[in-house]
Each structure stands twice: as structure tokens, then as C-alpha cells.
Image 1: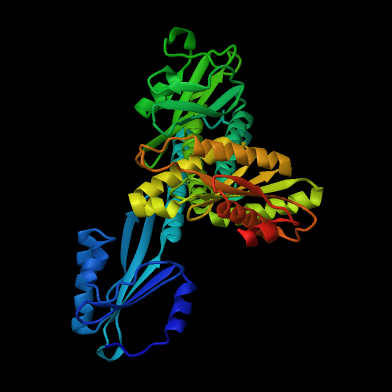
Image 2: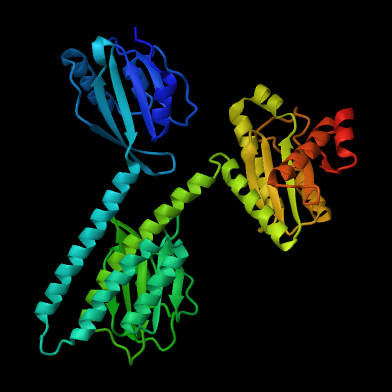
Length: 492
């Protein structure tokens, strides 16, 4: 048995880091689990191998168990073991594991520390370093192949400056679109190109979508098997066509174009897009220009991959995994922002609180998997019934919240009724059978008024209106009224 430890103190220490702490006896039974800010099951008395096998590969479990047995036998701490795996979002995670025997033969402590951020920074730094080394080698090769008497020192310095300008984009914490625009502007400015564009592969990987450009007109999408751009992506090699009039692959994109250079954007052996340049007769690209642009494209690919990864992490942090809506944490942020904006500029603001009727009965009768499908479909119907400017969020459980900026009470009631009808008229028979009387929602509506002192009051009033709807006929919309709502709720 373990001696009594100050659990509150251990929990406080663990909560200061994204960490986990396991206390295991000599029989490999987990006695205590301390996990920071997570709601997990309590695995007391479970076998260590069985517990780890739920989350890790057998090979990794074997390594950890072997270190555990060594720690028990020799009462010595094992070496740090790094575990790598992918989450359901496709993000790579890294965890460090350390096994240490406890004093007085009480058992073994297994400590897990999340090192994902450090590993990601190390990988990105290594990749940027490798790109810089490649750029330096290529520059040296280019300089040695040229006649130093003809090289303009100022021009050479200007070309090197491009690499710094592209690499520095990641330091400014910009969005993906802003990064793409910056790269195109740098290419246009430093290489005096008339037309330049960046194409990125779509999610399916069969089409290149133009995301940023200067000078292009008609090209928006290019199938992967079409054009000089598609050929560069397929072959993973740069393609330079000095005379596009003799190349059947050419797709007109810029007026008066004579030549085209397409350079694939590759990160970690994966093509993510193409940097394309189309030049008129008066601006021809020299071999030195092409080599430098290839180096710039390699650096640009790293920058694009970085901002995409950051955007994905940010999206996961504010999104409800089941419904794809904004989660409660982000709703709280949006609510405070919209409330302050409405108060500052004296604009209208409304809030809908939505609850699925008889949802517990659905879970009890058809199971939680069916309940999850219902939640996802209702979320989709709510989003489709709202406007692009509205914020649709999952509030918790079977409840949803919709923030309606610049919306009066009358307009909010109209939107709420449209949402209610969309759910009531939708057939859920693919999920629940026809014996169910029909799925519906209840909606509470409130709008910003003088009686509201803060953002929480807005939620409280919408909750009262929702409660009135749930206690009356359900499948209805109720609007908060300061003079009647409390009494109606009390009578129901």
C-alpha cells in the first residue's frame, strides 16, 4: 500500500504543466492517477499493460513495461523515453515518459510530459536551417559559375535579401492569406516580375486553387493533370517554358505572356502547391533568376506550411469536434466581444438559446451514437438557417447558442422561427425510426436592452425564455419580457 501523500499538493503541481503522473505498485497495478485539467476515468487497480495498451502501440507498451520492471528490480530510475503518435485531427503529438522508483519500496512513479510544442519548434527550426544551408550552397554554386567581373554586387545583395524577407513572415504571426499575399508581393518586387501567383492543392489533392496573385485574369483553378502548373506539381520538378506559344500545356493566365516558370512548393516530401510566374517579352528570366526563385519557393513552402499548421491548431482549439460549430469557450469570447461592440456603438444585439426537445428519450431509446448523429444534423440545420454574420455555437450537451449581431428583437424572432421550422420539417428517419413522434427544438430569444448590465445577463434572459418554451408546448419560440417572463416561468 502507498503511504498517504498530499493529493491536493500533487494535483496543484501537476496542474501547473500539461502533465500526467501515475503511481504504480510492484504488481504493476495503477494506484493513483493525476492528470491536469482533464476529465478521465479512474483506472485504480487496473493492470499497467492493459491501461497503456488502450492508448499506445504494443511495441511502446513493451518498452515502458520493461523499464518499469527494471526500476522495480534495481530501484533505479529509467532513461527518458519519447512516445510519438497522431491525434484524430492528424496532428503529431510527442510525450516524454520517465519511470522512477518511489522511496521505501512503495512502488514506481511513471511521469508523462507533453513535449509536442518543443518538438514542433525543433523540427521547424531544423527545416528552416536546412533551407538556409541549401540556399547558401546554391548561391555559392551560382556565384562560382558566373563571371565575378560581370556580377553586380548590389543586385546579389538584393537577391539574398529576398530569403530573409520570406523567412521573416513567420515572425509576424499573420494569417495564411496574408502570408500568401506577402510572398507574391516579395516575388513581384524583388524580381521585377509582371505576373506571379501561388496555387495550393485542394483537400482532395486533384485541383490547384489560385490563392494569391498579381496580374492574372482568368485562371482560378487548374486540374492536376492540366497545364504547365499541374505538370510541375505532378512531376515535383520546376518547369520553365521560354516560349509558351509552342507548348500545348500552356493555359493563358496573364496578358502578353511569352514565358512561364512553375516551381512546386514541397514540404517534408509533400507537394502543397505551385509558385507560378508568367513574363512578357521585355522581362526574361535568367538562369540565375530561376535558381534564386527555386530557393525562394522552397523557403516559401516552409512558411506556408507553418501558417497552415498554426491555423489548424487554432481552429481545433475553438471548434466542437462533434458538430463542427464553435465550442463554449469560444462562444464566451465572442459574446463578450459582441456585447462590448454593441454597447460602444449603440447597436442592436440578440441571442438565441436552443435546446433539443426530448433528447434524453432519444439517447435512452436509440443509443448515444444516434444521439450524436442527431446533434450533428441539428447543428447543420441551425447553421444553414442562420446568416453568414451570425455566430452559431454548441453551448453544451443538446443546447446551442446563436449570437445575432446588428439584429433587433423582431428580426431575431424571425430567424428563430426559421431555425425551428427547419428542424421540425426535417426527416430524421435515417437516424431514428418513424415511430418517434418527430424531433423538434425549443428556442429562447432575448435582445440587448437597458436592463442588461453585462454579457452574462444576456445569457440569463435567453435561458429564462428557453425555460418558458420548454415548460409550455415545446417546439416553439419564446421571447424574454422583463414584465411577464418571470411570472410565466413560475406558473409553468
